[in-house]
Length: 567
Image (cartoon, rainbow, N blue to C red; front, side, top):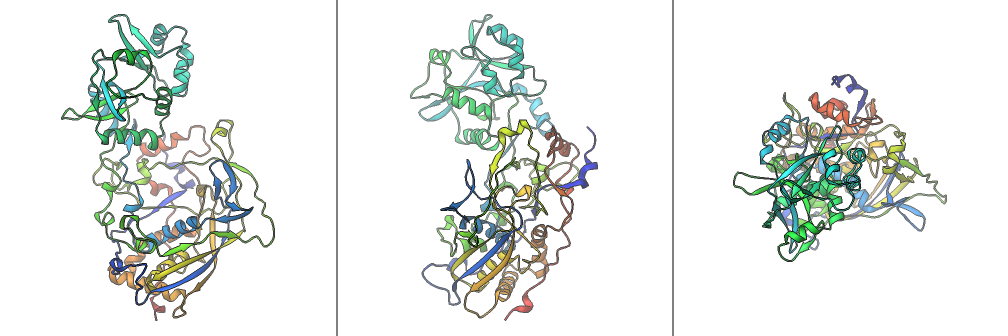
Protein backbone atom coordinates (compact mmCIF):
# COMPACT_ATOMS: atom_id res chain seq x y z
CA UNK A 1 0.00 0.00 0.00
CA UNK A 2 1.44 3.44 -0.90
CA UNK A 3 2.21 5.80 1.99
CA UNK A 4 -0.63 8.07 3.01
CA UNK A 5 1.55 11.03 3.98
CA UNK A 6 1.17 12.83 0.65
CA UNK A 7 -2.47 13.70 1.50
CA UNK A 8 -1.98 14.76 5.12
CA UNK A 9 -1.73 18.50 4.43
CA UNK A 10 -4.78 18.57 2.17
CA UNK A 11 -7.45 18.42 4.85
CA UNK A 12 -8.24 18.33 8.55
CA UNK A 13 -10.30 15.71 10.35
CA UNK A 14 -13.62 17.28 11.51
CA UNK A 15 -12.87 16.73 15.19
CA UNK A 16 -9.85 17.26 17.37
CA UNK A 17 -9.14 17.04 21.09
CA UNK A 18 -8.38 19.52 23.83
CA UNK A 19 -5.88 17.85 26.19
CA UNK A 20 -7.06 16.61 29.57
CA UNK A 21 -5.46 18.47 32.43
CA UNK A 22 -3.65 16.40 35.05
CA UNK A 23 -5.14 18.89 37.51
CA UNK A 24 -8.80 18.67 38.52
CA UNK A 25 -10.27 21.69 40.30
CA UNK A 26 -12.41 20.74 43.32
CA UNK A 27 -13.99 23.94 44.73
CA UNK A 28 -13.47 24.48 48.46
CA UNK A 29 -17.22 25.08 48.99
CA UNK A 30 -18.32 21.84 47.25
CA UNK A 31 -19.58 20.23 50.48
CA UNK A 32 -21.60 23.27 51.55
CA UNK A 33 -23.91 23.62 48.54
CA UNK A 34 -27.61 23.82 49.40
CA UNK A 35 -30.83 24.73 47.65
CA UNK A 36 -32.26 26.00 50.92
CA UNK A 37 -29.41 27.62 52.86
CA UNK A 38 -27.85 30.47 50.86
CA UNK A 39 -24.18 31.27 50.79
CA UNK A 40 -23.35 34.53 52.50
CA UNK A 41 -22.11 35.78 49.13
CA UNK A 42 -24.65 33.81 47.08
CA UNK A 43 -26.17 35.50 44.02
CA UNK A 44 -29.47 34.79 42.30
CA UNK A 45 -30.67 36.31 39.07
CA UNK A 46 -30.82 35.72 35.34
CA UNK A 47 -28.91 36.32 32.15
CA UNK A 48 -30.41 36.98 28.71
CA UNK A 49 -28.14 35.61 25.99
CA UNK A 50 -28.63 36.02 22.24
CA UNK A 51 -26.86 33.91 19.62
CA UNK A 52 -26.76 34.24 15.85
CA UNK A 53 -26.44 31.21 13.57
CA UNK A 54 -23.57 31.81 11.15
CA UNK A 55 -24.35 28.54 9.37
CA UNK A 56 -27.67 26.63 9.13
CA UNK A 57 -28.72 25.01 12.41
CA UNK A 58 -30.35 21.59 12.87
CA UNK A 59 -32.26 20.67 16.04
CA UNK A 60 -34.71 18.10 14.66
CA UNK A 61 -38.27 17.52 15.88
CA UNK A 62 -37.68 13.77 15.93
CA UNK A 63 -35.70 10.95 14.37
CA UNK A 64 -38.05 10.60 11.40
CA UNK A 65 -39.07 14.26 11.22
CA UNK A 66 -36.89 16.70 9.25
CA UNK A 67 -38.40 19.86 10.77
CA UNK A 68 -36.79 21.85 13.56
CA UNK A 69 -38.28 21.67 17.04
CA UNK A 70 -41.20 24.12 17.16
CA UNK A 71 -44.23 25.18 19.16
CA UNK A 72 -47.25 26.03 17.02
CA UNK A 73 -44.94 26.62 14.07
CA UNK A 74 -42.53 28.82 15.99
CA UNK A 75 -39.09 27.17 16.04
CA UNK A 76 -37.03 27.13 19.21
CA UNK A 77 -33.86 25.63 20.63
CA UNK A 78 -34.52 23.38 23.65
CA UNK A 79 -32.95 24.67 26.84
CA UNK A 80 -31.18 21.33 27.28
CA UNK A 81 -29.34 21.86 23.98
CA UNK A 82 -28.06 25.28 25.06
CA UNK A 83 -27.17 23.91 28.49
CA UNK A 84 -25.18 21.02 27.04
CA UNK A 85 -23.28 23.35 24.73
CA UNK A 86 -22.35 25.75 27.55
CA UNK A 87 -21.54 23.00 30.03
CA UNK A 88 -19.08 21.37 27.61
CA UNK A 89 -17.05 24.58 27.51
CA UNK A 90 -17.34 25.15 31.27
CA UNK A 91 -16.00 21.66 32.00
CA UNK A 92 -12.84 22.40 30.07
CA UNK A 93 -12.31 25.94 31.42
CA UNK A 94 -12.90 24.87 35.03
CA UNK A 95 -10.57 21.84 34.84
CA UNK A 96 -13.44 19.50 35.64
CA UNK A 97 -13.31 15.70 35.50
CA UNK A 98 -13.85 13.86 32.25
CA UNK A 99 -14.50 10.52 33.98
CA UNK A 100 -18.23 11.02 34.77
CA UNK A 101 -18.86 12.12 31.18
CA UNK A 102 -17.53 9.06 29.35
CA UNK A 103 -18.98 5.59 29.67
CA UNK A 104 -16.56 3.08 31.14
CA UNK A 105 -16.89 0.79 28.12
CA UNK A 106 -14.41 -1.93 27.25
CA UNK A 107 -14.28 -2.01 23.49
CA UNK A 108 -13.30 -4.85 21.20
CA UNK A 109 -11.33 -5.36 18.02
CA UNK A 110 -11.37 -7.61 15.00
CA UNK A 111 -8.53 -5.84 13.33
CA UNK A 112 -6.49 -7.81 10.82
CA UNK A 113 -4.17 -4.81 10.34
CA UNK A 114 -3.23 -4.97 14.01
CA UNK A 115 -0.37 -7.36 14.71
CA UNK A 116 -1.44 -7.78 18.34
CA UNK A 117 -4.81 -9.15 17.24
CA UNK A 118 -3.58 -11.17 14.26
CA UNK A 119 -0.69 -12.89 16.01
CA UNK A 120 -2.59 -13.65 19.20
CA UNK A 121 -5.70 -14.94 17.45
CA UNK A 122 -3.98 -17.03 14.80
CA UNK A 123 -1.68 -18.55 17.40
CA UNK A 124 -4.64 -19.70 19.50
CA UNK A 125 -7.21 -20.91 16.98
CA UNK A 126 -7.21 -24.32 18.63
CA UNK A 127 -8.79 -22.67 21.68
CA UNK A 128 -11.79 -21.37 19.71
CA UNK A 129 -14.70 -23.78 20.23
CA UNK A 130 -18.26 -24.03 18.83
CA UNK A 131 -21.42 -23.81 20.90
CA UNK A 132 -25.11 -22.87 21.09
CA UNK A 133 -26.32 -19.77 22.93
CA UNK A 134 -29.65 -20.41 24.66
CA UNK A 135 -31.81 -18.77 27.31
CA UNK A 136 -33.04 -20.61 30.40
CA UNK A 137 -35.16 -18.78 32.98
CA UNK A 138 -34.16 -15.40 31.49
CA UNK A 139 -30.42 -16.13 31.79
CA UNK A 140 -28.07 -16.84 28.90
CA UNK A 141 -26.38 -20.25 28.87
CA UNK A 142 -23.91 -21.92 26.54
CA UNK A 143 -24.24 -25.49 25.28
CA UNK A 144 -20.83 -26.70 24.21
CA UNK A 145 -20.68 -28.48 20.86
CA UNK A 146 -18.34 -31.44 20.31
CA UNK A 147 -17.48 -30.48 16.76
CA UNK A 148 -17.64 -27.94 13.97
CA UNK A 149 -16.57 -28.18 10.37
CA UNK A 150 -15.50 -25.68 7.78
CA UNK A 151 -17.72 -25.80 4.69
CA UNK A 152 -17.15 -24.42 1.22
CA UNK A 153 -20.14 -22.87 -0.52
CA UNK A 154 -20.32 -25.84 -2.84
CA UNK A 155 -20.39 -28.23 0.13
CA UNK A 156 -23.28 -26.25 1.60
CA UNK A 157 -25.09 -26.63 -1.72
CA UNK A 158 -24.42 -30.37 -1.63
CA UNK A 159 -26.03 -30.65 1.82
CA UNK A 160 -28.91 -28.28 1.10
CA UNK A 161 -30.55 -28.80 -2.28
CA UNK A 162 -31.58 -25.87 -4.46
CA UNK A 163 -28.96 -23.55 -2.97
CA UNK A 164 -27.69 -20.92 -5.40
CA UNK A 165 -23.94 -21.00 -4.73
CA UNK A 166 -23.21 -17.66 -6.40
CA UNK A 167 -26.10 -16.01 -4.55
CA UNK A 168 -24.93 -17.44 -1.23
CA UNK A 169 -21.36 -16.31 -1.82
CA UNK A 170 -22.28 -12.77 -2.92
CA UNK A 171 -25.01 -12.02 -0.34
CA UNK A 172 -23.98 -8.89 1.59
CA UNK A 173 -25.79 -9.61 4.86
CA UNK A 174 -26.34 -12.57 7.16
CA UNK A 175 -30.06 -12.31 6.51
CA UNK A 176 -29.41 -12.38 2.77
CA UNK A 177 -27.31 -15.53 3.14
CA UNK A 178 -29.90 -17.44 5.14
CA UNK A 179 -32.54 -16.44 2.61
CA UNK A 180 -30.55 -18.50 0.08
CA UNK A 181 -31.05 -21.61 2.26
CA UNK A 182 -34.37 -23.36 1.53
CA UNK A 183 -36.14 -24.53 4.68
CA UNK A 184 -34.27 -24.68 7.97
CA UNK A 185 -30.47 -24.28 8.20
CA UNK A 186 -29.94 -27.83 9.56
CA UNK A 187 -28.22 -30.65 7.74
CA UNK A 188 -27.11 -34.23 8.55
CA UNK A 189 -23.52 -35.30 8.05
CA UNK A 190 -23.71 -38.76 6.53
CA UNK A 191 -20.41 -39.89 8.03
CA UNK A 192 -21.69 -39.83 11.61
CA UNK A 193 -25.44 -39.27 11.14
CA UNK A 194 -25.26 -36.24 13.43
CA UNK A 195 -27.30 -33.11 12.89
CA UNK A 196 -25.51 -29.78 12.30
CA UNK A 197 -26.68 -26.17 12.07
CA UNK A 198 -25.17 -23.71 9.61
CA UNK A 199 -23.44 -20.66 11.05
CA UNK A 200 -23.28 -18.11 8.25
CA UNK A 201 -21.45 -14.85 9.01
CA UNK A 202 -21.35 -11.51 7.22
CA UNK A 203 -19.85 -10.78 3.84
CA UNK A 204 -16.08 -10.41 3.48
CA UNK A 205 -14.06 -9.96 0.31
CA UNK A 206 -12.65 -13.28 -0.99
CA UNK A 207 -14.48 -15.26 1.70
CA UNK A 208 -14.62 -18.95 0.81
CA UNK A 209 -16.00 -20.80 3.82
CA UNK A 210 -18.76 -20.89 6.42
CA UNK A 211 -19.22 -23.26 9.36
CA UNK A 212 -21.45 -26.07 10.50
CA UNK A 213 -21.87 -26.67 14.26
CA UNK A 214 -22.90 -30.05 15.58
CA UNK A 215 -25.92 -30.27 17.91
CA UNK A 216 -24.69 -32.33 20.91
CA UNK A 217 -26.61 -35.41 21.99
CA UNK A 218 -26.01 -34.68 25.68
CA UNK A 219 -27.39 -31.26 26.58
CA UNK A 220 -25.49 -29.62 29.43
CA UNK A 221 -26.09 -25.83 29.43
CA UNK A 222 -23.51 -23.80 31.35
CA UNK A 223 -24.60 -20.43 32.80
CA UNK A 224 -22.58 -17.51 31.49
CA UNK A 225 -21.00 -15.00 33.81
CA UNK A 226 -22.78 -11.64 33.68
CA UNK A 227 -19.60 -9.90 32.54
CA UNK A 228 -19.21 -12.26 29.56
CA UNK A 229 -22.75 -11.83 28.27
CA UNK A 230 -22.72 -8.09 29.06
CA UNK A 231 -19.56 -7.73 26.96
CA UNK A 232 -21.13 -9.79 24.16
CA UNK A 233 -24.32 -7.70 24.13
CA UNK A 234 -22.41 -4.40 24.32
CA UNK A 235 -20.22 -5.38 21.37
CA UNK A 236 -23.05 -6.65 19.17
CA UNK A 237 -25.85 -4.25 20.13
CA UNK A 238 -24.00 -0.98 20.76
CA UNK A 239 -20.40 -0.95 19.60
CA UNK A 240 -20.85 -2.44 16.12
CA UNK A 241 -24.66 -2.94 15.95
CA UNK A 242 -24.08 -6.38 14.46
CA UNK A 243 -26.41 -7.38 11.63
CA UNK A 244 -25.66 -11.00 12.51
CA UNK A 245 -26.94 -10.57 16.07
CA UNK A 246 -29.95 -8.60 14.83
CA UNK A 247 -30.75 -11.50 12.54
CA UNK A 248 -30.41 -14.17 15.23
CA UNK A 249 -32.55 -12.31 17.74
CA UNK A 250 -35.24 -11.64 15.17
CA UNK A 251 -35.09 -15.02 13.43
CA UNK A 252 -34.93 -17.29 16.41
CA UNK A 253 -36.38 -15.06 19.13
CA UNK A 254 -34.00 -17.16 21.21
CA UNK A 255 -36.47 -19.28 23.16
CA UNK A 256 -36.58 -18.64 26.89
CA UNK A 257 -36.81 -22.19 28.25
CA UNK A 258 -37.99 -22.80 31.83
CA UNK A 259 -35.80 -25.93 31.96
CA UNK A 260 -32.96 -27.49 30.02
CA UNK A 261 -33.93 -27.92 26.35
CA UNK A 262 -33.90 -31.40 24.83
CA UNK A 263 -32.04 -32.64 21.78
CA UNK A 264 -35.31 -32.95 19.85
CA UNK A 265 -36.22 -29.33 20.64
CA UNK A 266 -32.82 -28.05 19.52
CA UNK A 267 -32.98 -29.98 16.23
CA UNK A 268 -36.65 -29.24 15.47
CA UNK A 269 -36.35 -25.49 14.89
CA UNK A 270 -34.07 -22.57 15.56
CA UNK A 271 -34.38 -21.67 19.24
CA UNK A 272 -30.74 -20.67 19.86
CA UNK A 273 -27.86 -18.80 18.21
CA UNK A 274 -24.79 -20.74 17.02
CA UNK A 275 -21.61 -19.12 18.35
CA UNK A 276 -17.89 -19.59 18.90
CA UNK A 277 -16.32 -19.14 22.32
CA UNK A 278 -13.03 -19.27 24.21
CA UNK A 279 -12.09 -20.17 27.78
CA UNK A 280 -9.54 -18.60 30.11
CA UNK A 281 -6.74 -20.47 31.89
CA UNK A 282 -9.14 -21.57 34.64
CA UNK A 283 -11.47 -23.17 32.09
CA UNK A 284 -14.16 -20.51 32.43
CA UNK A 285 -15.92 -19.23 29.30
CA UNK A 286 -14.37 -15.82 28.67
CA UNK A 287 -15.60 -14.65 25.26
CA UNK A 288 -18.35 -15.24 22.70
CA UNK A 289 -18.65 -14.35 19.05
CA UNK A 290 -20.72 -14.93 15.94
CA UNK A 291 -17.70 -15.74 13.77
CA UNK A 292 -14.75 -18.08 14.18
CA UNK A 293 -12.28 -15.17 14.39
CA UNK A 294 -14.66 -13.09 16.48
CA UNK A 295 -14.17 -9.72 18.11
CA UNK A 296 -11.65 -9.74 20.94
CA UNK A 297 -11.93 -7.46 23.97
CA UNK A 298 -9.21 -4.93 24.59
CA UNK A 299 -7.41 -5.32 27.90
CA UNK A 300 -8.45 -1.89 29.21
CA UNK A 301 -11.70 0.01 29.50
CA UNK A 302 -11.92 3.78 28.94
CA UNK A 303 -11.61 4.57 32.65
CA UNK A 304 -8.56 2.31 32.95
CA UNK A 305 -6.72 4.83 30.76
CA UNK A 306 -7.68 7.90 32.83
CA UNK A 307 -5.60 9.49 35.57
CA UNK A 308 -6.94 8.79 39.04
CA UNK A 309 -7.71 12.51 39.47
CA UNK A 310 -10.46 12.16 36.85
CA UNK A 311 -12.10 9.20 38.62
CA UNK A 312 -12.46 10.74 42.07
CA UNK A 313 -15.92 11.07 43.62
CA UNK A 314 -15.25 14.65 44.75
CA UNK A 315 -17.42 17.30 43.09
CA UNK A 316 -15.81 19.44 40.41
CA UNK A 317 -16.91 22.93 39.37
CA UNK A 318 -19.28 21.74 36.64
CA UNK A 319 -21.01 19.35 39.03
CA UNK A 320 -21.26 22.06 41.68
CA UNK A 321 -23.09 24.35 39.26
CA UNK A 322 -25.12 21.92 37.15
CA UNK A 323 -25.72 19.21 39.75
CA UNK A 324 -24.80 15.56 40.04
CA UNK A 325 -27.20 12.61 40.20
CA UNK A 326 -24.51 10.51 41.89
CA UNK A 327 -24.45 13.01 44.76
CA UNK A 328 -28.21 13.71 44.77
CA UNK A 329 -27.32 17.34 44.05
CA UNK A 330 -29.67 19.51 42.02
CA UNK A 331 -28.32 22.10 39.63
CA UNK A 332 -28.58 25.77 40.43
CA UNK A 333 -28.79 26.92 36.82
CA UNK A 334 -31.77 26.53 34.46
CA UNK A 335 -31.87 27.27 30.72
CA UNK A 336 -35.17 28.35 29.19
CA UNK A 337 -36.16 27.36 25.63
CA UNK A 338 -34.57 29.77 23.16
CA UNK A 339 -37.22 30.91 20.68
CA UNK A 340 -36.05 32.07 17.29
CA UNK A 341 -36.45 35.81 16.76
CA UNK A 342 -38.76 35.79 13.73
CA UNK A 343 -39.64 39.51 13.74
CA UNK A 344 -43.12 38.73 12.47
CA UNK A 345 -41.79 36.84 9.45
CA UNK A 346 -41.97 33.18 8.51
CA UNK A 347 -38.73 31.26 8.21
CA UNK A 348 -38.02 29.29 5.07
CA UNK A 349 -36.66 25.89 6.08
CA UNK A 350 -35.64 24.15 2.87
CA UNK A 351 -35.45 20.36 2.78
CA UNK A 352 -32.08 18.79 2.19
CA UNK A 353 -30.55 15.31 2.31
CA UNK A 354 -27.28 14.67 4.12
CA UNK A 355 -25.18 11.65 5.08
CA UNK A 356 -24.22 11.56 8.75
CA UNK A 357 -21.16 9.68 9.95
CA UNK A 358 -20.52 8.24 13.39
CA UNK A 359 -16.89 8.41 14.57
CA UNK A 360 -15.79 5.23 16.35
CA UNK A 361 -13.94 5.58 19.67
CA UNK A 362 -12.19 2.31 18.80
CA UNK A 363 -10.20 4.08 16.07
CA UNK A 364 -7.18 4.34 18.35
CA UNK A 365 -4.94 6.43 16.00
CA UNK A 366 -7.31 9.35 16.66
CA UNK A 367 -8.77 8.68 20.12
CA UNK A 368 -5.55 7.67 21.90
CA UNK A 369 -2.28 9.58 22.20
CA UNK A 370 0.25 8.21 19.72
CA UNK A 371 3.70 9.18 20.93
CA UNK A 372 5.95 6.17 20.37
CA UNK A 373 7.26 4.18 17.48
CA UNK A 374 4.44 1.67 17.72
CA UNK A 375 0.73 2.51 17.87
CA UNK A 376 -0.97 2.67 21.26
CA UNK A 377 -4.19 0.67 21.57
CA UNK A 378 -6.69 0.09 24.36
CA UNK A 379 -4.68 -2.97 25.36
CA UNK A 380 -1.64 -0.90 26.34
CA UNK A 381 -1.54 0.00 30.01
CA UNK A 382 0.47 3.14 29.26
CA UNK A 383 -2.06 4.44 26.71
CA UNK A 384 -3.95 7.70 27.39
CA UNK A 385 -7.10 9.05 25.78
CA UNK A 386 -6.56 12.16 23.70
CA UNK A 387 -8.85 14.48 25.64
CA UNK A 388 -12.04 16.51 25.31
CA UNK A 389 -13.52 15.96 21.87
CA UNK A 390 -14.24 19.22 20.04
CA UNK A 391 -15.47 19.66 16.46
CA UNK A 392 -13.62 22.05 14.17
CA UNK A 393 -15.35 25.27 13.09
CA UNK A 394 -16.08 25.42 9.36
CA UNK A 395 -16.02 28.53 7.22
CA UNK A 396 -18.86 27.15 5.09
CA UNK A 397 -21.13 24.13 4.75
CA UNK A 398 -19.68 20.99 3.16
CA UNK A 399 -21.83 20.14 0.15
CA UNK A 400 -22.19 16.38 -0.24
CA UNK A 401 -22.79 14.37 -3.39
CA UNK A 402 -25.06 11.46 -2.43
CA UNK A 403 -24.67 8.39 -4.60
CA UNK A 404 -27.44 5.95 -5.41
CA UNK A 405 -25.86 3.46 -3.00
CA UNK A 406 -25.92 5.99 -0.14
CA UNK A 407 -29.55 6.98 -0.51
CA UNK A 408 -30.69 4.25 1.88
CA UNK A 409 -28.70 5.86 4.74
CA UNK A 410 -29.45 9.51 3.98
CA UNK A 411 -31.11 11.81 6.52
CA UNK A 412 -33.59 14.48 5.49
CA UNK A 413 -33.24 17.81 7.30
CA UNK A 414 -34.93 21.19 7.25
CA UNK A 415 -32.40 23.39 9.02
CA UNK A 416 -32.96 26.85 10.37
CA UNK A 417 -31.25 29.15 7.85
CA UNK A 418 -28.04 31.04 8.35
CA UNK A 419 -28.61 34.43 9.99
CA UNK A 420 -31.41 33.53 12.41
CA UNK A 421 -30.94 34.61 16.02
CA UNK A 422 -32.43 33.29 19.23
CA UNK A 423 -32.44 34.39 22.84
CA UNK A 424 -32.37 32.23 25.93
CA UNK A 425 -32.83 33.19 29.55
CA UNK A 426 -30.48 31.56 32.04
CA UNK A 427 -31.77 31.63 35.61
CA UNK A 428 -29.40 30.92 38.47
CA UNK A 429 -29.93 30.49 42.20
CA UNK A 430 -27.44 30.88 45.05
CA UNK A 431 -24.31 30.88 42.91
CA UNK A 432 -21.08 32.08 44.45
CA UNK A 433 -19.55 35.01 42.50
CA UNK A 434 -16.80 32.80 41.11
CA UNK A 435 -19.39 30.24 39.92
CA UNK A 436 -21.24 32.99 38.07
CA UNK A 437 -17.87 33.94 36.62
CA UNK A 438 -17.35 30.37 35.41
CA UNK A 439 -20.77 30.41 33.72
CA UNK A 440 -20.00 33.73 32.00
CA UNK A 441 -16.56 32.43 30.98
CA UNK A 442 -18.18 29.40 29.32
CA UNK A 443 -20.64 31.62 27.44
CA UNK A 444 -17.94 34.04 26.25
CA UNK A 445 -14.89 31.74 26.08
CA UNK A 446 -13.42 33.76 28.97
CA UNK A 447 -14.08 37.09 27.28
CA UNK A 448 -13.24 35.97 23.73
CA UNK A 449 -16.69 35.78 22.15
CA UNK A 450 -15.45 38.05 19.35
CA UNK A 451 -12.95 35.37 18.32
CA UNK A 452 -14.56 32.04 19.32
CA UNK A 453 -17.71 30.25 18.19
CA UNK A 454 -20.01 27.73 19.81
CA UNK A 455 -21.28 24.69 17.91
CA UNK A 456 -24.70 23.10 18.38
CA UNK A 457 -27.01 20.53 16.86
CA UNK A 458 -26.59 17.89 14.17
CA UNK A 459 -24.05 17.64 11.35
CA UNK A 460 -21.30 19.68 12.99
CA UNK A 461 -18.71 17.75 10.89
CA UNK A 462 -20.41 19.26 7.82
CA UNK A 463 -20.26 22.81 9.16
CA UNK A 464 -23.78 23.17 10.55
CA UNK A 465 -24.57 24.84 13.88
CA UNK A 466 -21.88 27.55 14.05
CA UNK A 467 -23.05 30.15 16.58
CA UNK A 468 -21.81 33.58 17.57
CA UNK A 469 -22.76 35.18 20.88
CA UNK A 470 -23.99 38.67 19.95
CA UNK A 471 -25.54 39.94 23.21
CA UNK A 472 -25.32 39.09 26.89
CA UNK A 473 -27.29 41.00 29.52
CA UNK A 474 -26.62 39.89 33.10
CA UNK A 475 -29.43 40.88 35.46
CA UNK A 476 -27.55 40.57 38.73
CA UNK A 477 -26.47 42.87 41.56
CA UNK A 478 -24.26 45.35 39.71
CA UNK A 479 -21.28 45.01 42.01
CA UNK A 480 -19.14 43.83 39.08
CA UNK A 481 -19.59 43.61 35.33
CA UNK A 482 -19.26 40.29 33.45
CA UNK A 483 -15.47 40.61 33.14
CA UNK A 484 -15.19 41.22 36.88
CA UNK A 485 -17.03 38.00 37.70
CA UNK A 486 -14.88 36.08 35.22
CA UNK A 487 -11.77 37.53 36.90
CA UNK A 488 -13.03 36.18 40.24
CA UNK A 489 -13.45 32.72 38.69
CA UNK A 490 -9.95 32.80 37.19
CA UNK A 491 -8.38 33.99 40.45
CA UNK A 492 -10.18 31.47 42.67
CA UNK A 493 -9.39 28.52 40.38
CA UNK A 494 -5.68 29.38 40.22
CA UNK A 495 -5.51 29.86 43.99
CA UNK A 496 -7.31 26.67 45.00
CA UNK A 497 -6.20 24.25 42.25
CA UNK A 498 -3.40 25.46 42.72
CA UNK A 499 -1.80 26.53 39.47
CA UNK A 500 -0.38 29.61 37.83
CA UNK A 501 -2.30 31.46 35.14
CA UNK A 502 0.21 30.20 32.57
CA UNK A 503 -0.41 26.60 33.64
CA UNK A 504 -4.19 27.08 33.41
CA UNK A 505 -3.76 28.75 30.04
CA UNK A 506 -1.76 25.76 28.78
CA UNK A 507 -4.63 23.45 29.78
CA UNK A 508 -7.53 25.43 28.27
CA UNK A 509 -6.13 27.46 25.36
CA UNK A 510 -6.28 24.52 22.85
CA UNK A 511 -10.07 24.33 23.24
CA UNK A 512 -10.37 28.05 22.58
CA UNK A 513 -8.03 27.81 19.60
CA UNK A 514 -10.23 25.08 18.11
CA UNK A 515 -13.28 27.33 18.65
CA UNK A 516 -11.78 30.20 16.63
CA UNK A 517 -11.98 28.38 13.31
CA UNK A 518 -8.69 30.09 12.49
CA UNK A 519 -7.39 27.40 10.15
CA UNK A 520 -7.48 27.17 6.40
CA UNK A 521 -7.45 23.65 5.01
CA UNK A 522 -10.54 21.76 3.93
CA UNK A 523 -12.31 19.81 6.69
CA UNK A 524 -13.64 16.30 6.06
CA UNK A 525 -13.33 12.72 7.27
CA UNK A 526 -10.72 10.31 5.86
CA UNK A 527 -12.17 8.54 2.85
CA UNK A 528 -15.00 11.04 2.40
CA UNK A 529 -16.30 10.97 -1.16
CA UNK A 530 -14.17 7.98 -2.14
CA UNK A 531 -15.41 4.71 -3.58
CA UNK A 532 -13.51 2.71 -0.90
CA UNK A 533 -13.49 5.04 2.14
CA UNK A 534 -12.21 2.45 4.62
CA UNK A 535 -8.95 2.17 2.70
CA UNK A 536 -7.96 5.54 4.16
CA UNK A 537 -8.54 4.37 7.74
CA UNK A 538 -6.54 1.24 7.03
CA UNK A 539 -3.70 3.32 5.59
CA UNK A 540 -3.63 5.52 8.70
CA UNK A 541 -3.01 2.45 10.85
CA UNK A 542 -0.49 0.89 8.49
CA UNK A 543 1.52 4.12 8.34
CA UNK A 544 1.30 4.65 12.12
CA UNK A 545 -0.37 8.06 11.74
CA UNK A 546 -2.42 9.86 14.38
CA UNK A 547 -4.91 12.70 14.87
CA UNK A 548 -1.94 15.10 14.98
CA UNK A 549 -1.30 14.40 11.30
CA UNK A 550 -4.82 15.51 10.40
CA UNK A 551 -5.28 18.48 12.73
CA UNK A 552 -4.51 22.20 12.46
CA UNK A 553 -1.70 23.63 14.55
CA UNK A 554 -3.35 25.24 17.58
CA UNK A 555 -0.55 26.85 19.58
CA UNK A 556 -1.11 30.48 18.67
CA UNK A 557 -4.21 31.42 20.70
CA UNK A 558 -3.39 34.18 23.18
CA UNK A 559 -5.58 33.87 26.28
CA UNK A 560 -5.25 36.99 28.40
CA UNK A 561 -5.67 37.12 32.15
CA UNK A 562 -8.63 39.08 33.46
CA UNK A 563 -7.16 39.48 36.92
CA UNK A 564 -6.27 43.08 36.21
CA UNK A 565 -10.05 43.65 36.30
CA UNK A 566 -10.55 42.18 39.75
CA UNK A 567 -12.27 44.50 42.26
